[in-house]
Amino acid sequence: MKPLHALLTESRRIEDDDLRQLFLDARTHNGWLDKPVPDTVLREIYDIAKFGPTSMNTQPMRLLFLRTAAAKERLRPHLAPANVDKTMAAPVTAIVGHDLAFHEHLPWLFPHHPNAKGMFEGKLPLIEMTAFRNGSLQGAYLIIAARALGLDCGPMSGFDNTGVDAEFFAGTQVKSNFLCNLGYGDHSKIFARSPRFDFASVCTLL
Amino acid sequence: MKPLHALLTESRRIEDDDLRQLFLDARTHNGWLDKPVPDTVLREIYDIAKFGPTSMNTQPMRLLFLRTAAAKERLRPHLAPANVDKTMAAPVTAIVGHDLAFHEHLPWLFPHHPNAKGMFEGKLPLIEMTAFRNGSLQGAYLIIAARALGLDCGPMSGFDNTGVDAEFFAGTQVKSNFLCNLGYGDHSKIFARSPRFDFASVCTLL
Image 1 (cartoon, each protein chain N blue to C red):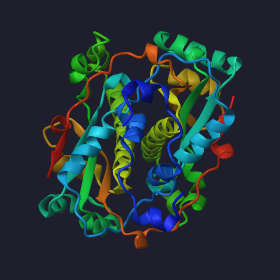
Image 2: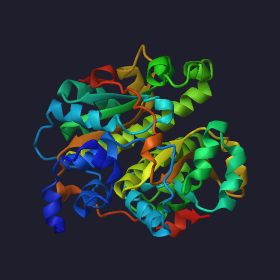
Image 3: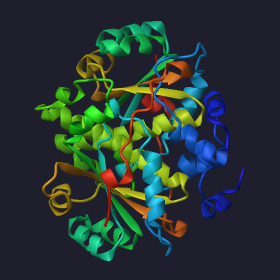
C-alpha cells in the first residue's frame, strides 16, 4: 500500500477492470446466489461510503439492513408487487433513509461554522431539500462502495414510503428514500442493458 | 483486460489504493493547481457516470461544464460569497441539474414498461421527487467517476438555485441541483478531515 503522501500526489486513472466492476459492466440485479453477506461486510460498506462528501458534512443518511426473515416480512406489505420476490430472496435489503433532524449534530460534524445548526432550525423546506439531496448522494456512495467490495446491488424506488416510515421509523424524524437489495447476483437473471444518453444529449460545454 | 465472462464471475474487493483514491483519502478541494482539464476527460467522466443505476432508467441529470471565463462570470453573481474565489479559480465548474421533463424520454429509455411515461404525466410532485433523487444519485456517480480518473472535486450547495436556473436553464424544465468544481487539487489548501458517524450511530442490523 502506498504511503499517504504518495497517494496524494499520484492520483491516476484506476484500472479498466475496476471501472468495469464499479460502473461500466455493473448491473442492477434481480436474482441472487445462495451466498450470505456477513455483517462485517455491511459494516465495511458503510465505513467506505461514509467518506463521500455531503454539504456541510451533514451526513443525513440513516440505514437499516434487513437480514432476517422477520425483518423482511415487516417490509413485504409495503413493496410494489414487482419488487416482492426479488427482495424476499435477497440476502440483505437496505432501507436508505435520511434524518430530518440531521442539523442537531452539526456542532460536532461541522465545527468550521459556529451557527451551522441555526441555519436550518425552523426551516423545514431547507431541511427536507438538504436531507434528500445529501441522503441520495450517500445512497449512491453506498451502491458504489458495495460494488467495490465485490457485491451486487438492486436499488428500487417501488414501495410505499409512508408505510415503510410508519413501520420502521415511527417516533423518529427519519424518512425512507429508496431500497437497495445487496448480495451476490445471479448473472443469468439480469435484463438486457437499457440505453444511456450520450454526452451530447445531456451535457453542454460552456 | 479481462474478458466480460471472467469479470462477471470474478468481482472482488478492489485494491486498497483505489478505495483510498475514491473514498477513504479523497477530500473536497478548495484550491486548484494550474493544470487544465481537457474536454476529453469531461466526456469520459460522463461516459463512466452514465452507467450508474437510476430508477426506471430515468437518467434525469443534465450537466453544464463551465470552462471559460465568460461562462464563470455568468455564474459568479449567484454564488455564496465563500464559494466565489475557489469556483472562479477551478479549471471547470459543473452545474448538476435535473430535467423535470425526463419522462418524455421513457419510451426509449425504459422499453420494458409500455406506460412508463404515463405514470408521471401531470404528477408534478412525483416528477420532482424522482428527478431530484435520481439526479442526485447521478451527481454522486459523477463525483466518484471524476476521482476514478484522477481528478479532484469540490461539490457545493451554496448558491442561488433560482438565479442559476434563470441564467442557464431559461426556456427549459431543467433545475439546478448542486455545483461541483473539477480539476487537480492543491493539497496544501484542504481543511482537516471532519468527523464521520460510526456504523452504530446511523446503521441498524435487523
